[in-house]
Length: 176
Ligand SMILES: Cc1cc2nc3c(=O)[nH]c(=O)nc-3n(C[C@H](O)[C@H](O)[C@H](O)COP(=O)(O)O)c2cc1C
Image (tube, rainbow, N blue to C red):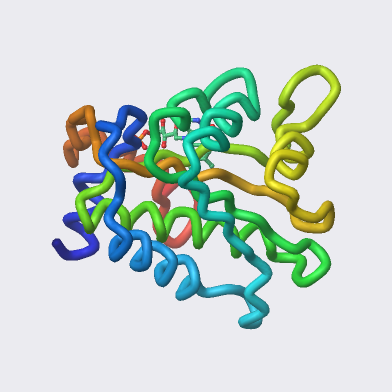
């Protein structure tokens, strides 16, 4: 599938079959994140690939809503960025997050972005602090997202061309 075809078919997938991801495919996902472009080539990101079921189950409660499906995913990629290394760590991490989602889709996997940055785990702890404590990652490594990945157990219809919001795109000046 070419890139535009992939984009046309892309939807967030939040239900997974439970089938493990073959090690060769996990390697492709590792290659994908490491090939992500970063500002000034500073590679401010680091990635924690979590396949351990117990840890995935604990990650699934890193925030009260929108992460529960991680408990059934085959893989969670915790996308971390070093804010000391680059002031574009958020952009660098975002690019890696979406690129790995697209590569996952291209090899038959489904995925969903789980927002971590600026989210709370409970009244006391941020989702980031919860994950750092669970995975032992250092405080200076910010956590932007977790990408949940697995074989899809749901089929979601692609958006049609008519569904797209053409009014969001302006030509030469705003409003035209
Ligand atoms: C920055 C970002 C954060 C997101 N955070 C979550 C999340 O925490 N939990 C979740 O279930 N989906 C999350 N999503 C997925 C969006 O809800 C989803 O992309 C959007 O509803 C459009 O649906 P689609 O991806 O199927 O086209 C996130 C997506 C983005 C781009």
